[in-house]
Amino acid sequence: MRGGIRSIHRTSYAITENNRLTYIYKRDANRKIVEVTCASLEIKVQDKWNTIIYFDSDETHSGILHKHTYVSLEQDAD
Image (cartoon, rainbow, N blue to C red; front, side, top):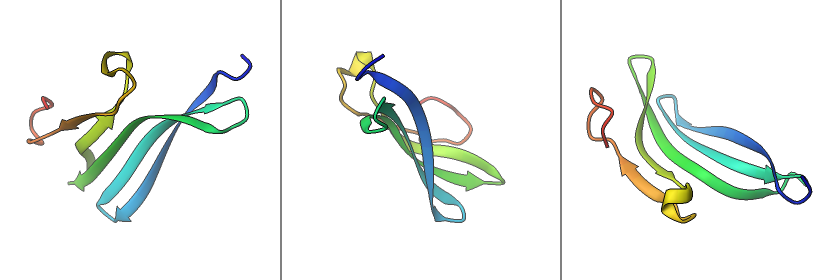
């Protein structure tokens, strides 16, 4: 698969002990990042990581990052 997407990766960066940024990205055969498909801000509440806001990109968003916000830790709806 020459020049195409070779692998998908996930990386997280701690902001504080209970806050982190996570992003998912694609690399080509040369290991160059060619697309960020998701970026999120997560908080840890009672030892469980919860996504507060995230941006994703898929075929329904025409390759543009689309924002989702969670308003409740009890419900998964955004």
